[in-house]
Amino acid sequence: MQKINNKKVFLSLIILLAAFSSAILIKNIAILKKQTDLNDTTKLTKEIFAMDTIMSLTAYTSANDVLNLCEEKIIELENLFSTTNDNSEISILNQKGENTLSQDTFNLIEESLKICNLTNGALDISVYPIVKSWGFTTETPNVPSLEEINYLLQYVNYKNITLSKNNNTIKLNNNMAIDLGSTAKGYTSNTLINILKEHNVKSALLNLGGNVHALGSKPDGTPWKIAIKNPLTNSNAAVISIVNKAVITSGAYERYFIDDNGVKYGHIIDPNIGMPINNELLSVSIIGKDAVLCDALSTSLFVMGLEKSIEYWKKNNDFDAIFITKDGHIYITEGIEDDITLLDDFSNISPNIIKNEN
Image (cartoon, rainbow, N blue to C red):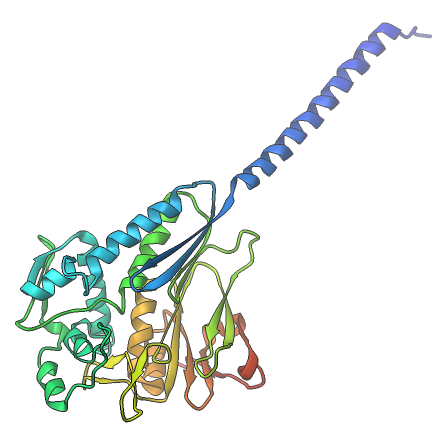
């Protein structure tokens, strides 16, 4: 019988125990590192008043200065795009009829004009003289005469805006003026999303005064839930779940004035007739990946009305939409049917699902 060497067995046990302990230690270090990495991601929030609205920014990140960078960019873009700041690039363009612009301003005008073309003028950034005549850019609302409106309409035509890519110069015809209010916040949120991505932020939610834009999902991997207002009440009509998308709503239920005769005028102007929109729609919400497109379409589809908007979506369904009408109905494009939860007054009705049967 072979004699067992107790010393060798003891040494082997010690080596085995050491290896086992090392494995446990490595595992614990890995777990600790994972926990530390998670703890490094902090919820950062910031509120800013800019572009005539309160903006709320939320990001989950370890880059503590990223929202400060976002704030700086918002202020920079506001100073470029504002029609009420006499020193902005847009104001100087409107005053002189020609201006060499920064890349941001040139890009936004170029993108806006593409959507003016796509919507056949339902969006027209040259409608500013008429918007101004109605007093929506001032603290003094006004109902212009039909003579004044007809006079100003001759200067409303986005096709008379000339772009020169060689030197970023924009030229307007005589007496023209532009307003980027229907696309500026969308462009701003697109820009902020890019800043967040450059700083490795994976989860963020931007609310630029009702223009909501989500980067990724919530930190736990679930979609962001965004409320859609009920224009008839102070409650919410629906909640939509989104990941990496923007949700932008236009309507005349928040920004309007009532004249001495009790007539209500909303701020969205039909560029074809120079009058505030008065159709069957109360609000239009556009959902998609490009916030400039969503911003522009929320305005232009509101101008088109329900029937023409549905036709437009069927031909250009690279976005989804929610329409709320004055008779209390809600219309939802089929792409987001499963992402919508109806609330309150709408919870007991069947939504009208818009299907693309082409």
